[in-house]
Amino acid sequence: MFKNRTVFITGASRGIGKAIGIRLAKEGANIVVVAKSIEEDPKLGGTIFSAAEEMEKTGGKALPIQCDIRDEAQIQSAVERAAAHFGGIDILINNASAISLTPVESTEAKRYDLMQDINVRGTFMVSKACIPYLKKGNNSHILTLSPPVNLDIKWFTNHAAYTISKYGMTMVTMGLSAELKKYNIAANTLWPQTTIATAAVKNLLGGDALIKMSRTTEIIADAAFYILSKSSTECSGNNFIDEDILKNEGINNFDKYAISPTDKLYKDLFI
Image (cartoon, rainbow, N blue to C red; front, side):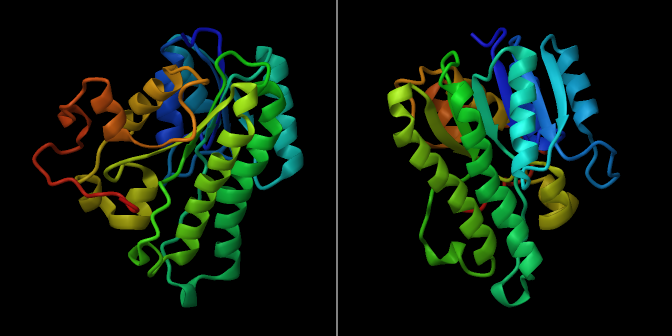
């Protein structure tokens, strides 16, 4: 199903983006590893090159491309290079995201702008650049890592800037689902039920204590696999939660995804 299909993944040097790339590479997909990291940061780990190497070891093909998705010219260059290398683009994963869980008073303009530029504008501009290739793709999908829009006031309290940016990603994707329906291009979002053990969770949210209450990136990768396996003409305009996707596939035991099966799981934001 994924053999020789090309998947363009932003923020793919580590974490969820890399996990999705590895999962699809196992199925024979061509993975375009898009991120800024070309030198390893000890706190974050991983580069586009190390991620691409891991993906190729599973049997797929990978093309590492350094790209800052805040820069329209870099986006266009990356998309054109990917399409030329693999002969097109069939799937786009909008994964790259910046986070700062700060209240309005202590959110600096540069931090607010970073989240808007990467999360909302980045999702918008990368999608825009990929659309001409997705129109020619095989069972074309756009999948964005963002939450259902939940207007409960608690999700705006203490981190309004981040919430606005993540909901913006979702709204862009929902708009695309309607715009691109006539081209048989699906657009959906995916969000985890629990926190996921990533560098961002460890460094910015709760350290090792929260990591122990989280699940591995593999649960998101498996959920993405099932979404992207569906027909683009029948599966679009949805805000998916990872657990729901897996349950729909007959998977009800999630213990294998837990970092520590004996620790209570911590619900993710917006759930």
